[in-house]
Image (cartoon, rainbow over all chains, first blue to last red; front, side, top):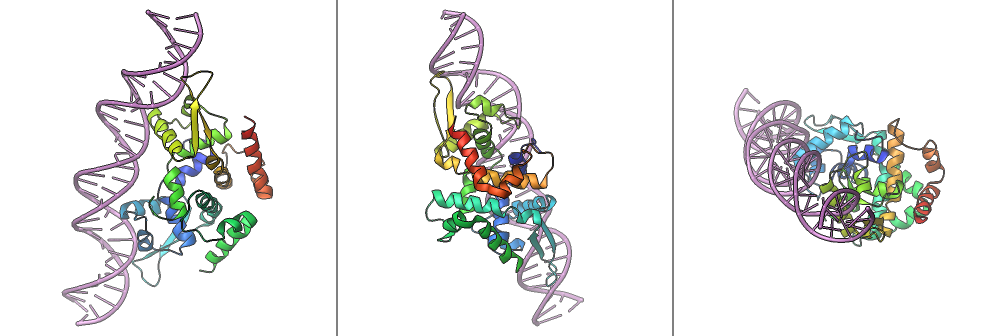
Length: 131
Length: 131
DNA sequence: TTTACTAACTTGCAAAATGCAAGTGTGCAA
DNA sequence: TTGCACACTTGCATTTTGCAAGTTAGTAAA
């Protein structure tokens, strides 16, 4: 930890170009497996992905278990601490959508967030819980 | 830009360990000058600070002008695009405060955010506007 | 039970980013 | 015109990242 600043604390967890993309894949893309993360369009290298998954797990943001149906696979999922990052992601999406056209953001996302941000977060959470 | 994903887009701006700390200093610490950023407790190197200020300015998140009272100084301030990152910072602070005790977060910050997040953001904005 | 296949890493090495110390250039005040 | 403050810049060592090529272990068909 670099200081007692909460922003600095958060950046120690996901202040890089890749960690939040893994979390994005878990939250919005329904991904759970190493290979799925690897196939995301940003193209993360396998060594970086491996180190990020380890760091996120050590940080208590994700957890993993051997996938029962195929024991060579590991299944990753968000912990409560990881799920609580959804509001951060939502604000980042809203900010990006406001300042850059053409991003992959659903049409009425901005108005939904402006109108009832809590409901947007709750909807994302409940969709995840179904899986 | 690595992809059309809004999270990825945002990370291209501030997906590192330093950019958001500069923005934090601008938003919460009332800092405006190179030396002030440099003196923050995390200890940013001058070359990194210089490159981050340039990148943030090129991105339209901050702007600078020669400080009239002392022309060797440059004064940095947030643009509208930068000010719109306040909600992201607020969510990050709330997340950190929830999961780590002892951080420098005001006592009732969490309850204020839970109770009326918009008001918290508006209060930060209006305090900044006074300067 | 051998062979092939798949998934999740690991390793080696080159390239890029970062950290640190020591400069440089410009304005200002004595 | 000397000294100083401030905002950078430079050089170099260290660290992190990116890429390609392994390695290990479970699975499934021959």
